[in-house]
Image (cartoon, rainbow, N blue to C red; front, side):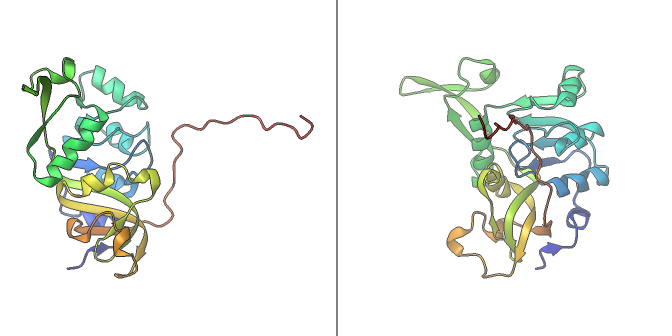
Length: 237
């Protein structure tokens, strides 16, 4: 089965529709599937529920889908870098399901493992637990969280082969591996596309069986979310 497509738009052709659930990998602006996000924007699909650690920043990543009002609901753990997100949420234009970051990661992992729900101590006695089942184990209270599964997962990998085996690099190995397992269709953009057999099997993070479509995106822009600089000290100092 052919998995490699010529462009992000081609990889997503016929797969996007209004009202669907999309997972989008990344941590801040690191490891985000930016080319695939742009293809979602160009498709015009609306009323989307997007599962992602954060919503990008204004004008970059998922922030672009917020500008076009294509996202109806975010399931996230951190959204503090996006002013437009805050404006839409406070204005009642955007739904938000907040999760502790570890809980979000485990909900995604559980969805990919076929686990419908699990119990965690995180959030017990807080707003996070409101409306959820709380059960006692060993004299301690735990709140029930449900697994997450999407229609499409969009992930970014450092390297991939034609069979869909993926390798992530450093911080980009964040939500991407779990999301790749937790969707009906996983589409990956890869920086380096190699022939089957060129990746050491022991180095593969996501086996190709989880990946349906691949697009080669060489030399993507690596955005810096927050640039912190200081003056260079003179040699005399």
